[in-house]
Image 1 (cartoon, rainbow, N blue to C red):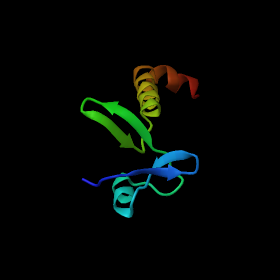
Image 2: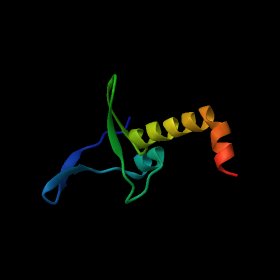
Image 3: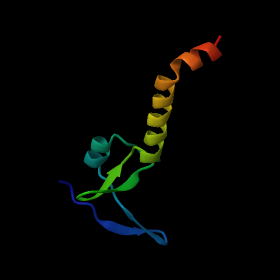
Length: 74
């Protein structure tokens, strides 16, 4: 497990991600990361959990109302 160190970045604090960690997360400079609570602590992920929930809701609606959506598309 890679160890990350908190360091000073301007007037703020930040962490440095080495190439190995960036490759594991599949991120590059400029990408956003999200810190979410998990049962065993915290999770750092490139995936926005709120957006993922919205997509799941949209998929559920599209599945449940597919006949209505089909009729509206004509």
